Image 1 (tube, rainbow, N blue to C red):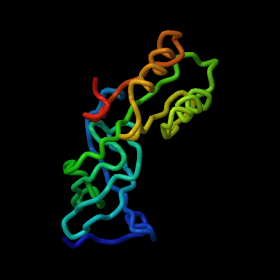
Image 2 (cartoon, helix red, strand yellow):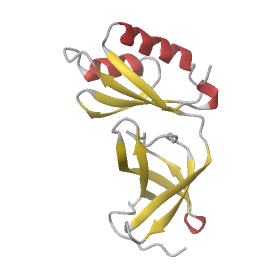
Image 3 (cartoon, rainbow, N blue to C red):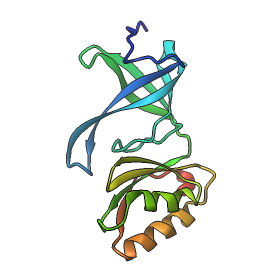
Length: 162
């Protein structure tokens, strides 16, 4: 596969940006999101996702994906997931505006999660495969019960399902 190279597409450290085009239940519309991925086998179009998706469903950090160059988009475009990492992605919206987003993130970091903040009031959680998701879910449910947050599980791995 001959993929044009540009500063926007390839960093110095063997990473590329991949475009995801999907329908977002959160936004209620067709959406696009770009994420960083590590090159695994450029010739075969295989990459390992290195970002936590803010909106894209059914993908998580560490997933191995297939992406091909789309001349209309002028960049690599996600086609399918070929190996799941076992990580999960959870989206969190802060309902109680008196609560700082980073305070909630800190509570989840203490449980072993990585989070990525989109803006004040919205962030995503990367739940590593080795964590007991029931501990994370308990904390999320506690925050829901106090009307602090609401959350969605757009990519819950087999390891983290009940």
